[in-house]
Length: 282
Image (cartoon, rainbow, N blue to C red; front, side, top):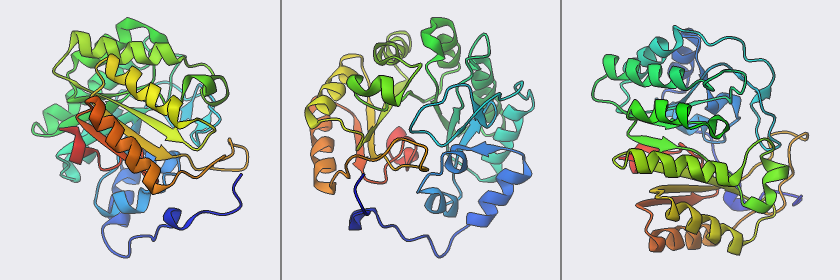
């Protein structure tokens, strides 16, 4: 692992804004955010702007990926009141663009797809003008759950490839590169009006040639939006960072993606799947 963070990965915490207001609202409603659970470096910035990425279906994941800070374990049964509480938070924060993700629920017959659909519906009922982006797991590649979420018509359907095919066994055990591509392809074929989005981490040993091939694969299935950010090790028990990618390299990836035909490409050291999502989602 590199011995120290480069200068471009040093970030000041916001000195103003509504961090505590956002945190207290989310805690008061008994909600989870991927911002907190995944130890996102942008938490302070996003909370200060009164926005967050809601994480439904519990705070424990049935998978145990080597890069992810979300705890592994038994998530317990879905809370049928959770969609309504998410909608309440969206309304209280006056969000015009809401992002909803979840832990992976391989224990549920539909992987939690109906819960996603219920959450989209609750937001639409409570805050009709709010656009919704979902970031879903792969649902084991089953078409039914994918269709259930897409049929609820989120404005953006996000599913992250995370890394290049060669590194899947180490980085995303239990997932499949072609399975994830097929998910995005199915969404675009059945619902071409939905924007498809995916995200990648870098710094885990991938080459630029491999990354460019992943971008090409995503475009071949109709992916519209791509995010690329630096992987940062959440704790000593997680995968090590093998390389810190320079801002110049991120800019080259962004230009390459746009040249390939992506509608939006957000690439940079602190970029995460839902970072400033409203600015590129619709």
